[in-house]
Length: 478
Ligand SMILES: Cc1cc2nc3c(=O)[nH]c(=O)nc-3n(C[C@H](O)[C@H](O)[C@H](O)COP(=O)(O)OP(=O)(O)OC[C@H]3O[C@@H](n4cnc5c(N)ncnc54)[C@H](O)[C@@H]3O)c2cc1C
Image 1 (cartoon, rainbow, N blue to C red):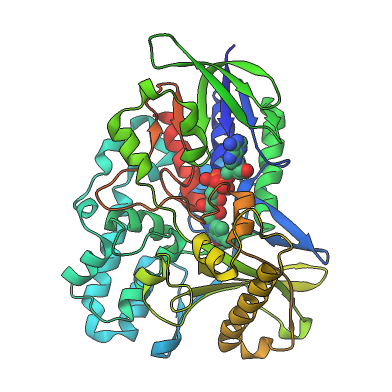
Image 2: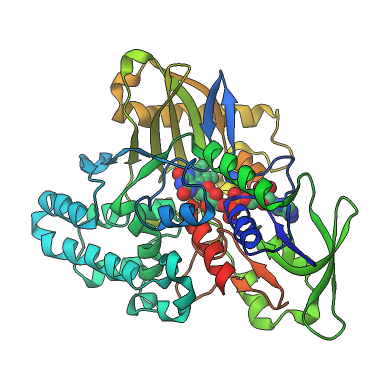
């Protein structure tokens, strides 16, 4: 039997590899780092486990639970309830968001902004409507799905345009309603409303943390890979492809470990700039080249990690703290010192009897480089980089104490990671959500111009853990 290669072992590659193995394919999973998982990886400090790129998700109770069941991971990947707050310090708002559906959310916000009640309800009805008409979410009935039917009137409208055209002109609402833009990374002036709704509906309806975070996913995937005999090659990458003389088909792949495999199909769950040089010029159409040239990365994050003293009695919680409330500036580069948002997650995954605390501030890699005067190759151990980390750790702590003044003196920071660190888990850019989804432009998606090669990952369909899994499910059937 020929081999199906999956390149990259983040959540996208892992999901794809398992779905293909379940369908009887001979799967080889190729990972550049010495360990699998990409942004699912956790790390240890002081005996505590910290997540890198998975702090919370939507979709438990519906599409995520359906996918976990199909992958047979439902016994290891389990939700942990979490309370969500939005704090807009400039406007003096601290709103606790319900976690029991879009109607409940609409009612809470309508009570806060009675003048806009009807328009707020209409906003969430539109979000619900987009989700309902997105066949990709119906993972249990994929055989009957016609993915083309996904186009809606909201594909031709940005989030910002939707808000303006529907009289949602209060500046606070222009942040609170599309707050989950912070979880897909495309600013409201760029994101198609439909795309935003698809990414946000699960999170707006119900946010959950995951018991044992990325460790739970990796434990489940390892178990299933052993069942289906998926071959995992770490510290390995793809070096060369051979193609059919006349047809746009890949025939053989040579890896950095020297092995050559006869190829049935290849799934690239990595950044497009890493695999495009492997594809021959004769198979790349001008449209395809234009699409890939115009890719713009989303933000990354500067993250601090710590633990809390027992007397705090911390609850699982997620807080979005925004000092300057312009999501468009926060989600585009060049505004590091003026616009940012800090997400804060308290997790009662009580290891060693302590609650962990993680706070992540939006930051673009290029802004981080100019702020610290280092580039991607020379930052490690550099005094200026260490000074930059200290400065931003203090800035984030300032935000944290605005929201949780009682944490002062009880929060012990054990490490910090910058967008440069993110590149290690998600090379080469280190963006949190891959490439931005701009209205009117399509990304590299699905089947490539070489017919047995496919693009996957958060650069392609939807970002985030749930979005990346959905992308793999859709690709597996199409
Ligand atoms: C700080 C932070 C917090 C986040 N928080 C959340 C959250 O709470 N919830 C949520 O849903 N999402 C969150 N995200 C986003 C989410 O983590 C990502 O969208 C998702 O994990 C991307 O998965 P992926 O498989 O597409 O890519 P990745 O996880 O980036 O995996 C790509 C893998 O491919 C490997 N690779 C790269 N190049 C090659 C090559 N040439 N050959 C072989 N292997 C290669 C990499 O080493 C990596 O293992 C967060 C992201 C960040 C940075």
